Length: 288
Image 1: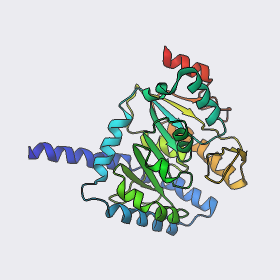
Image 2 (image 1 turned 90 degrees about the vertical axis):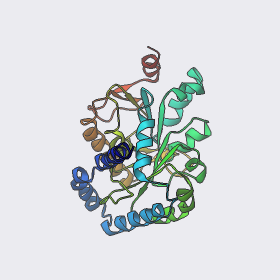
Image 3 (image 1 turned 180 degrees about the horizontal axis):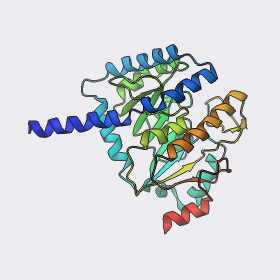
Image 4 (image 1 turned 120 degrees about the horizontal axis):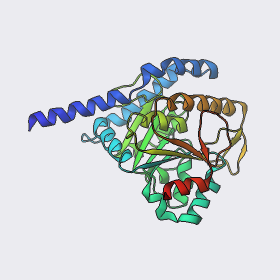
């Protein structure tokens, strides 16, 4: 029995190591922070603050066990839907809801980038995981999802403080950073909440799974679910436009490491390296 337990622990440790993508991503990270004039030391401070919260969790919480549970969830269904906060989010989900009903979404793994989870909760669509730096969600979404993958960076320390009790009390929390990982925090790579989902899951997938992206728009528009204080879709500012350009390039890169079929649903074409389909084509593919 001891030998079996040791093997399970070794597997869990290997999974954490496999998901850490810092060595491969760090050159891109430093390019990004230099371009945006971000503060590396503030990123480290945020990582350490989140690590301190996780260290205070119940002694039964172990990141290796949570990662193992999340992997089991991710591979439990043949189709993964990833939701971004782009302007096409609402209309795409509403059309699918009207044609197929809410139970249709229960057949998928639903992973939301930050504020997209607000819309999904409003529509009573279950969320398997939220990838968030906490600036686009409320505590309602945090406690609505099955898993919360919380990202720490130099600009969200106050939000980490605001959500501290929720992080402490919610079992299925995974902490991520964009600097060197720690024992209880991983660095999966990625920059924005949306592209970070693909970076995180790319080593968890079964090759037969299909990935569909909704509301992952990289035009110069910001969807109203991007931030809590945005009431309508609006033109992106210069910084946001630059972030969106990075996201396009990063998804192009990580896509080369994902053997699975991946499609953008009802989004305008921004890259010849992506595959785009209509809502109807998506429904037909799922029904076939």
